[in-house]
Length: 160
Image (cartoon, rainbow, N blue to C red; front, side, top):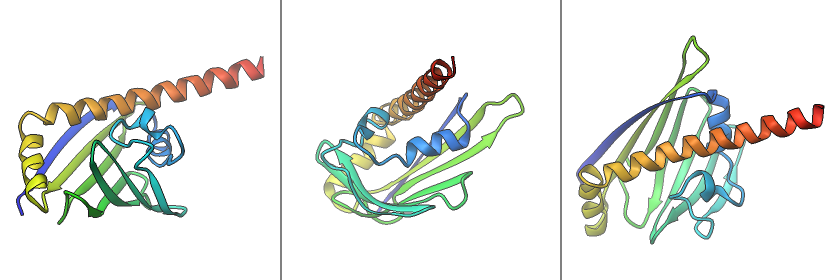
């Protein structure tokens, strides 16, 4: 298997806790935060205080992920089963607070195709598909920022 590692970086107004709350929100509407996680694929097998076992996907591609956020500044999503991904596939989010109140989010995505479809997708992701993953990452940050902004506005209007 050929391993494909892709790195992304974004700076956001969110705290690590706010992004983590969005990342670990496995309720209906998850696809509004993460476009590659269609509601019809979503199945939560187990959810604990700092880990979860979740199947998600979209467009005919699914994976079962073990989420581990026991270190809230280093969150690991390890692929435990998939119809296309195997090996060391998964996602790792690393959060760093900046002195100005923003947060740097580094995302490493590893893709090892376990069959022909996975190997072809891995090649596509390494080349032309990289931009699709990057836009999905950026969109998730914007969606969680918007959700947190709406929550702040609701709290302010209730307090008024």
